[in-house]
Image 1 (tube, rainbow, N blue to C red):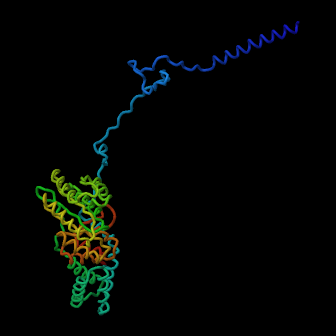
Image 2 (cartoon, one colour):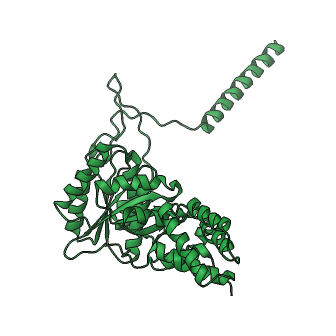
Image 3 (tube, rainbow, N blue to C red):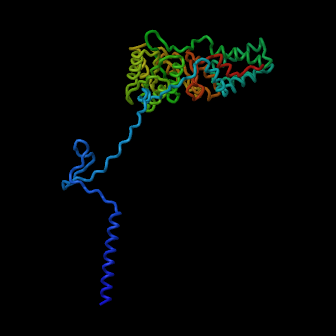
Length: 401
């Protein structure tokens, strides 16, 4: 019996100990929040946002609202930032003296047309073979047959009368004759201002000559001279042309007028001039689609653009963009464009990438209009007003002292 009592006492102790242990664990366990019987509400007793009623009519539990944090001060937004435009516009390099600053870009032309001729002409008693080499050098430099014949005849006469015994003598003689061929009396100024209306500049050319880029660089030239510019994206056939032109304009604060892709280019050109008049701009520069000079329909369309624009304002400049690296092929293109529209000037691009600087002489003889602009690199300010003296001096290099 004693053993029975001992076992009963142990059992009672174990039961009491287990109950105490369970109670202690229950006290340490975190209590879950009890579900509310009513709907969770925000101020005014309205159901909390995001609360969803289940199919049985009850309402799901609502998380505690986040602790409100002080609002950060709003950043001040400028008009330029709000419009998506850069806050600071680029300042183009001044137009005056650009060709002088870029003369090193003519080094390749200098190697053949300049230094090549000087090495031939600085010798004594030039033979017929020497003169044939002079003629070949001029032809390879794209001076053209007529220009080469005139230049060789003038050089022959001058060496016969005066001689050219030194390098300096040869340089002075060649400089004078090249300037005579390039022309120092032609009016090379761009008509980019008019009384009581914007001046209109129409830019034309074949595919791949860099027309759209040239339009953007012309805008930079004008802005550098303090003029306000409107750009007309009348190249509606190339999807990226309007975007490209708009990017050029936005850098210097020029407005770009564009139309729907594949739309009527004459309509876009008309709207650009209309915008220029409304805003009192100094100049409207119109970019046209590149077109092969052999396509009659496209050339007729170019004439139509000019006619439509002329209903609002006269066209002051028609600039033909030619790629200097194409040489004599550029002359065939130029002839057809001259028949479609009355050209007033030529912009020669990629002149830094060719050893054929004589194309300046050939183009002017062919068209009877001056070269007004030359492109001497890919930089935004590498388009320069053409200066005959600076061009010839760059070809010949610095005089020997």
